[in-house]
Image (cartoon, rainbow, N blue to C red; front, side, top):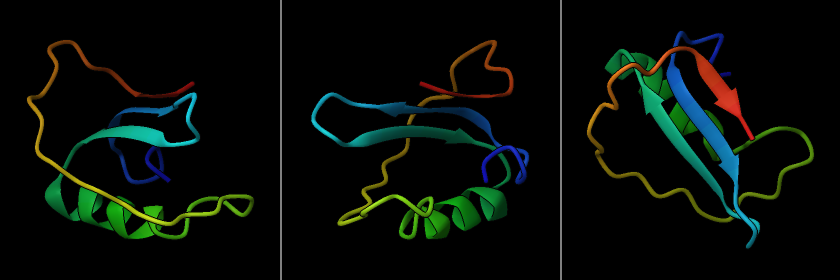
Length: 66
């Protein structure tokens, strides 16, 4: 979804089952991604989404998953 929306950043699976997402892009695209995160991919079980502003990392290109 992030790539489709033109968002730069990453999604990182954490050892405790959480997923950390950094999303940088147009506000409307970030808002769309945030709404989609409540659903997640078909195999996901989402119980909470928390958002907070973060500084834009220099040199951030594309979107990666890990």
